[in-house]
Length: 267
Ligand SMILES: Nc1ncnc2c1ncn2[C@@H]1O[C@H](COP(=O)(O)OP(=O)(O)OP(=O)(O)O)[C@@H](O)[C@H]1O
Image (cartoon, rainbow, N blue to C red; front, side, top):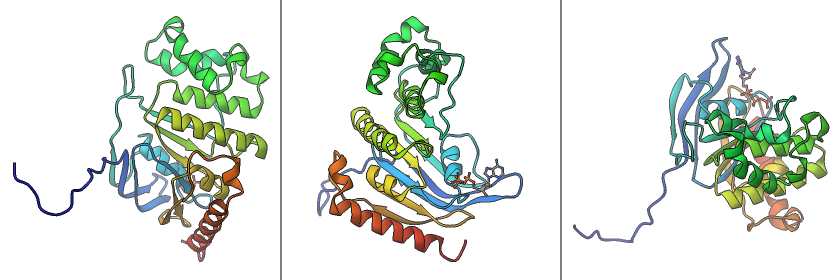
């Protein structure tokens, strides 16, 4: 082995998600993305903000493999989660999409059931996840008996019960009141820090993106392009103190300015 001169370089981990020059035109002819490049490091929390219709959901759907881009490359480097199958990406939608006829426990069991685990075999994982999201006492309740915030907790528990290394979240808290949203923001951050997963989070809220993220990708008007990226300064763990800190307010101002610039003058 030969020695190399110069400074020792830290090995950069391969990105968990890498989009290279991705474009997407739906069969209807609607162009949703144009030349989008984005990398997300393992364990990073990245938000995507942008105006309605700019292609945020399309990015998540492409990463999840639900639609194929018409051009460009999508590279994922994700450790396999436990259990069989390729379900190592969790997806949380704006609507909790729970099975109304099944109780909370059975809703969270679903992805494990799809992997062939009986209710009894899955019980320890389900109970641990319900405890993490504060729903132990609601295990036997049906979705119709739950508040919006509790339904979203079930949806998050269901997405995380298979311990996916990548969690995609599409405006999960948009329909919730602000107090519930703030609480779920904090709970999500502590889950993320405990589980060590990578999160890509779509939101319309500049404030939410700043509170949660390490980095923010700012999209412009369609056809969708990422116009800017910013890093959010601010120590972790973040909590209510961060919401009133100078770092937070400065980052919100920067993100708002970038969003305004990105959406000025149409696509
Ligand atoms: N299945 C589809 N077929 C045709 N066009 C689609 C389809 N899904 C999305 N589009 C179009 O692609 C563009 C991007 O849509 P997308 O849902 O990705 O945007 P978005 O930024 O997530 O919007 P919003 O913030 O309103 O949820 C829009 O013009 C939308 O109408």
